[in-house]
Length: 509
Image (cartoon, rainbow, N blue to C red):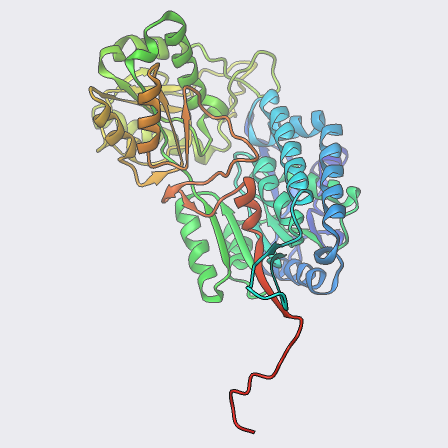
């Protein structure tokens, strides 16, 4: 699609991939893709529906049931994943810029995303290539050979969000292919372009026809049909809680496997001893900015809740607000830009509503809280919003309880370690969190008590492909990345072979 979009502009409508062919939507419907930096359309994609989805699932079903991919030797599957990684490296600049323009993030963030995508493909290639063919189970007899083996689930429906389009797609596609599955992916209708480009790269790498399918279109038709489709064996969804609940409900009647990664309201707990030195203070402030405002806060693991010890609160928040006000906003491809626009007008309106409710409930605005003035770097039609720091927040505020998904940081305070832990765990989500302290014992204690799927100590945001990613509570079920991420795309089979069968004589005769 990247090539088609670049050469044909708004005429690149064949963005549905079924049985190895690119096609337009069966209905002929299309959707304009808007550049969030200026609100102007720059690509046109097919707007698929249930009919397109059924065709894509049928092709994936046929490829799984009758094709070679599920039975392809592991070494060959791993080699293909590595070829995909090499192609991603080759196209890093092009794909990074496309991700920047499509999602609004800075070009450097886009390039880093492509690096992480390539890492994910390499990781799962290495993981499956290094595995034993099965786990032998001692049956207590030399005449019995018993082994536990892993097999692909079947047809996987992959539904991805708009904030990290290609990265989130890779976390699903790489393990699905490594395990021998076929799939149909539905990228966000807002940011589909790099996922379309990835399907082209899979074909270039030699993936057999029909193994990979994509349907561009909205969640209420394409996503809903994928979740309920009787020929889909697994659905993996990353997105919001409301949509994730609907996916789980739609999948329940057919009892298909479900993996849900749904979001978070992530605490960043800062103890005073982390700020005892100038270097420690500067590092904690800098990382709090990174936690809250990378990609304009449109990150499921964003550290949107700063929970800081009362004795250092005023100094910490004052410096945080000063630096937040100096963050350079602009088009992601612009020189020196540190933060891009929000992804859509709808998303900006949602952020504005949260800030307004917080101020009405007593929060104190320390920086931001409005749209910036237009400039050559920030066109008037772009969806920009200033990085915002809200002080004197409390747990009854909606902005503290609910996921804003924008450049908004709330500040709460604590006096004791127990109070800090209680505040951090007082959320219906449980995706990620961090603790900052110079006390190694306290760091381990607090990390152990936090009810979140990932806990960083004296850091924020790094992830490792070999470490599982997922959350507690309403942050979802299942895991991505790591061995557990691969396990989501497998079934386990016990093969029991009697090498010397004998009659059992249970019955007369």
